[in-house]
Each structure stands twice: as C-alpha cells, then as structure tokens.
Image (tube, rainbow, N blue to C red; front, side, top):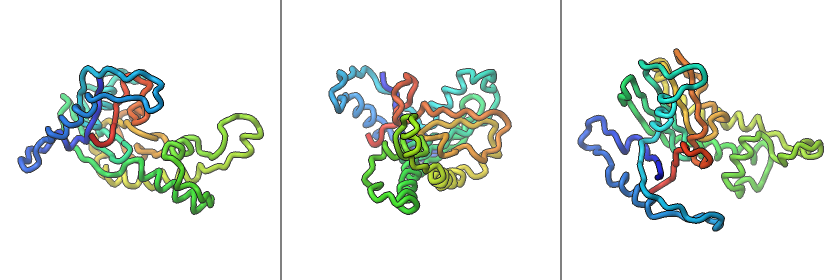
Length: 239
C-alpha cells in the first residue's frame, strides 16, 4: 500500500465549475505508481504495490498531528489550523478548521529548490567555490543541514579542515522564508495552530514569525527523501 500526494488545488475548486477537480491527473498518479519501481542499484527486490491512495498535499501532516498526542498536549478539538507543506518545488498551504473543514488553500512555486539554488550562488560568490554548480542537489542539502563543507568525522584534523558556511545557510534560508511569509501573510493572525511538514524545516525557519495561540507542530518526517518511517508521505514529482 502506497500513499502519495498531489497539490491541494488538484482536489478542491472552491465551487468554481471552470476549475474542476483534476480526476485525470489524480488517476494518472495512481497508475504511474501501480506500474511498479525498481531500486537503481539493484540492492532490493521490487516491491509489490497492492494499492495507491493519493492525498492532497498539506493534509497528511495535519491528520498526523490531529490524531496523535504531541508530548503532553493533545490537539485541541476546536481549532483553525494553518498547514504548511514545504516540498521540493512547491509550498502548499491549507487552513483547516474544527470538523476537518477545508477553509482555504493555495499552492505556490516556492519549494526548497529556491533555497538550494540561492545557496549555490552564495557559495560561488562568497566562498569562491567554482565547481558548486556541478554538485548534486543531495550534496548541497547535506551541506545545508550540516552547516559546513568537509568531513563529518569528529577528529581534530577533520574539524580544523571544515569550511564554515552556516552564515550562508542562514542567508539562503531567509531568502526562501521571505517568500513563505509573503505566501502566508495575515494567515498567522487567524489561526490557533500551525502544522508544518516537509524538507529542511529547521534550516529554512518556515514557521518563524507566525503568531499562534497554541503550539507549533513541525514534522520533518513528511519529507521527500525520508523513507525510513512508515508514515512518510511520498512527494513524488510529476506523475
């Protein structure tokens, strides 16, 4: 059984007949995954996919929070929740109120790729790293998460050889976060809860600046590259 997502606007149309629910794309996503997949390195046997369910992006993280206790605080019965789902190429937002009612939603092309791209530019300009454009995205994201370029070994020699880029990570995060804050302008004043799921949440500060009455729930497990947790939400690009 596989759970995957598509942008929330593919599922809801605010009653606008000129923008119908995109049943064709939803079905295409199912069909594509039902076609099977193989490990690129041949390390694992191809999985047997029995069924595929496609969910609106932003909603799985909300249901994960709303149906589980977070520490000593249970999710309140009455709420208005802003859900922020930060993916590779898009940021999806939904406002959900008591009774799981979808109040509002939107999708913006402000994904983590913008932070990665800006970080590459900063590395070339500020640290004069000429081959940064040829670095795989996965390597760039690893540098962003670590905050330095170099070995992760904790020996004195390895630590001394590291190049600290934490200041550039902060600058790249602010670049993306300014866009995310513009996307959610005013919404933070309307909601009592905020749920966030997606990529590099800690590094990009996606929740900074939102004024909330109750707690903030951030779930990095809802990440495109996190397949270790059975609850992971697969944000597979395309269909």
